[in-house]
Length: 197
Image 1 (cartoon, rainbow, N blue to C red):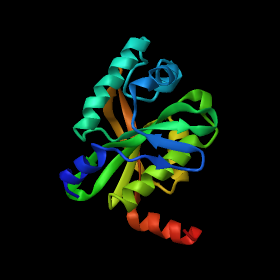
Image 2 (cartoon, rainbow, N blue to C red):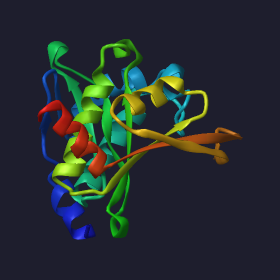
Image 3 (spheres, rainbow, N blue to C red):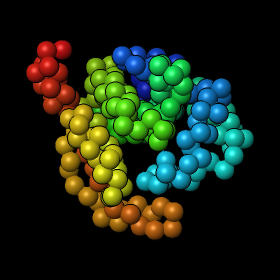
Image 4 (cartoon, rainbow, N blue to C red):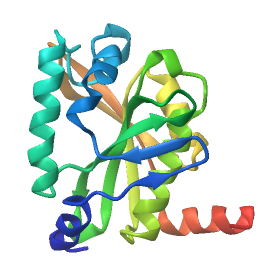
């Protein structure tokens, strides 16, 4: 995959729909909804970033993302839970390895909405986009050791656990081990065929 394709796609990031969700570009207008979860220690326990200290920080972050979208260098969608008309998290690609046609995905969901299948619904749609539209060969996801909820989500969408990278990440003052799960396009297509899709 060529970097030029990433720019074309993500400088005008497409809206993605599921049964209950709209995945769209993050907006400054999402500041209140994002701050509601990004300020919680529970949300960031297994993430590389600290809780947002105040709403101004969240608003400035979203303003910065506007420039990253314009440059075609930000690959995350806002997750809108349509039954509540609320932005409840993000899901998308964190990085691409263009020569190898592979990417990494990530997601964050407001703890208030955990247990509703929202992250799975969003992740399945992003995987579909990655394989069908971007023609990726491999998509992987990473989780900090101990985050069993995240590993379970990855496996529930068809990803295979590939192992633990011991003490591979220095975050918040300590080394943490990181697990990797991944799915290949051939596996995704086989699963879709088995479902009759």
